Length: 268
Image 1: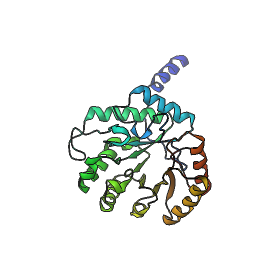
Image 2: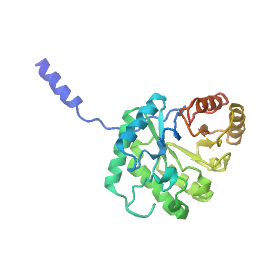
Image 3: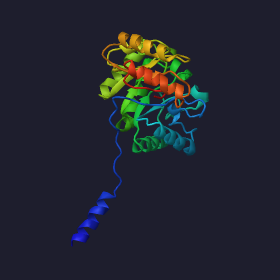
Image 4: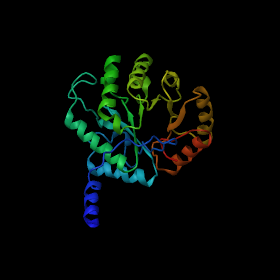
């Protein structure tokens, strides 16, 4: 009888467990730029990224002890046109493709099972459809991402280099839309050296871009000055080297952390 009960218990325990978002780490660690390796982590949800490349991304991310995965949820031309979209047509206005949504969720679930908290970057730069879109369409996209993928998402970033695609008023509307549907972290990423969008009400994280070819001392100094401009929110040293796994990148990441950054995006 005891063995029979144990057998029944094993049947129940072997049922597929529901995958849910991981808690967002307080010290985000990502390696999203890898020019030499040809691995652009933002593009993991593109159907142009085949499974062998996706699993190589996982292997490298594990080797580098990362704990988050920053993923685009719409991209047209960034990273050599590695497009990401779950729409059947126009950004933020056309119906969604359920097959693509299912496929994207599968990749997200695999990422979570491998220990990475997913941060949804709603839009990329170099995406003309985002530039042309209205605030309503951008908000519809944000709402779609929350409703279709929110159970697998640990945090949000409104977009990459927002000045290039999204007026401040549109970004503020997107943040308000997200806040109406989630209590998870909402961040912004801007062009080099800028922090204006981080002052939008409801934003709690700054994904800061330093630019490239900076020294350790320059990264440290800029971290202090940029943090002072956006007090009271989480400051992530997001972008500072094109090869996140290099020794140079790791040195810059450590300099940012020592200066007060609460996470890194290009190695540490």
